[in-house]
Length: 252
Image 1: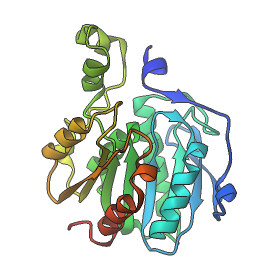
Image 2: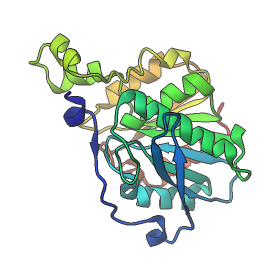
Image 3: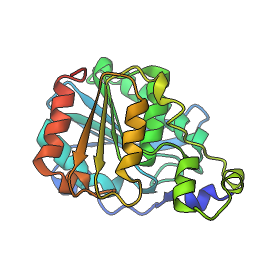
Image 4: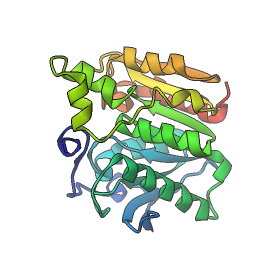
């Protein structure tokens, strides 16, 4: 199964916790529907909006501490970030279906908290996490859907990354589809797409293509000079202004 090598790249070793960035947080253990034990961090904020984070395919939640800190500082929102099965302290092995179960469990956990307004949850995805956020938006809706560096599908990625490999063979060897392009038309919540114009992994044209297929209300923020994983750094104040405007008025 090539998914293990081409789609998922988990790490178990943690490089820190939100405390290293001066953030209050809670370690959270919660179960997926199939019994897999998952781990995440809840970072409380001053706003009544909560960001549910869906991170990319590599590393684990400890590699997103700076982003958590910057978001808390700039927007004041609460954040819940968790590791998919097989990542960090979460048990199991990653798969497309498994990530959806994990995302559903994370939403269920947020619903169980008395300090979270369930009608004020923003689904916030990056790269691979965008596909998981899109899936959750089709199933449950949300206050808003924010996608940074989204892609169309694994098939589309395969065409761009391995142009000489027959696409039929590529898809045959992979179980994961993560086909956001076929799903985005079923999303009926406000959408914000953020994409770096220097992204060499997922070109900005791919983000525009998904955006064009999406329903209104929607908005697109170009991260000038931004690559694939540094938008929150390169984007600077404009990046967080775009997120703040979306949080304050998702429908535009």
